[in-house]
Length: 389
Ligand SMILES: C[S@@+](CC[C@H](N)C(=O)[O-])C[C@H]1O[C@@H](n2cnc3c(N)ncnc32)[C@H](O)[C@@H]1O
Image (cartoon, rainbow, N blue to C red; front, side, top):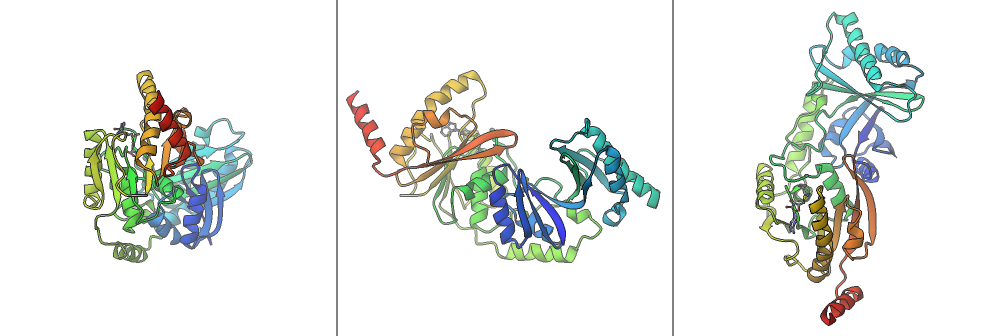
C-alpha cells in the first residue's frame, strides 16, 4: 500500500478526511494542515480529480529519523529517482518544518536537491534542472523534531486552481476553502443558495459544480502525468467516467449579487468560462436592500475585509446594518459569514449559533453561523425600540 498526504486549508481537515473515506482511501488520519491516507498508487489520480477540499496530494517516498542534513541527504540519495521520472524534466524542492533543530531550511532544501541530482548523474550522466516557477516534478520535504518525510507532489499546480477562473475580483477566496465552507454550512444541491457579496463568484462556481456533479479536476493537468509509472489508459477511463456523470446544465436555485459592476463582470466571465452562465442567477444589488429569492435557504458570503482605516470605519457602520437586513429580509434562512474581522460578531448584533476557525491562506478567519428565526424575540424588541426612538 502506498502512503499519501493530502494538504488542505487549516480547519477543513475533518471534511477532507470524510471526502477521502468516500473515495475509498484507507488508514485515514487527520493532522494539522492535512490528512494522511493509504491506498494503491492510482488512488492519487481519483483524489486529485475528485477532491474539492484538498490543496495537494503528496506521495510519500521516504521517511526516517535525522540528526543532521547529511542523514537526509543519504536517504534521499538512496531513492530510485530514475525509476520515477526522466532527468530531462525539471524539479523544485520545498521544505517545511515544525520544531526542527536544524538552523537553515534552505540548506536542507539544497541537500535534497543535490541528492536527487547526484543520484541521476551517477546512474545516467544526466541530471534534472531546477525550475522554481513551473517545475514538472515538485518535491517536498517535511521535518519535525526528529523525523523527516520526503514526498513527490502528484498535483503540480495546487488543486484550488481548477483551471476555470479567468477573472479575479477583490480578494477572491480559494476554491477549496469555498467548497469546504459550503459543506460546513450543510448546503446540499437543491437548497436555495445566495451569496449577496459574491465578488468573482467563487462560492457560486463551487456550488454549481457540486450540484451538477462536475469533478473539480476535469479540464486541468496534474504532475502525476509526468511520472514514468503514469497509467494513461486508467486515467483516461477515470476522466471518461467523471465526464459521463455530469448533470444537465439547467438553471438552479443558486443566486449571486454584488454592489460592484466590476465584480459581477468577473463572476459572469468565470461562470461563462466554465459553461455555467445559465445555471446561476446574478443581480447587481446592495446586500442591505435585497429580498430573499426563496422562503428559506442558505446564505454563504465573505464581506469586504477593509484594510485601510477609512474602510475599517465604514465596515463598523456596515455590520449592524447587515445584521438588520438579514433579520428583516431573510427569516427562515441560515447565514454563514466568513471574516477575519473579529469586530463583526459584536457589531452585527445577531447571536452566532456556531463559530468555526478557518484559515484563508495565512489569514486567520472565523465562519459564523446565524439562524434567522421568523419573528424572533430579539428582532421584535429591537423593532419596538426603534419605533419608540
Ligand atoms: C471579499 S469580496 C468577496 C470575494 C468573493 N467571495 C470571491 O471569492 O471572489 C467582498 C465583496 O463584497 C462586495 N460588497 C461590498 N459592499 C457591498 C454591499 N453593500 N452590497 C453588496 N456587495 C457589497 C464588494 O464589491 C466585493 O466584491
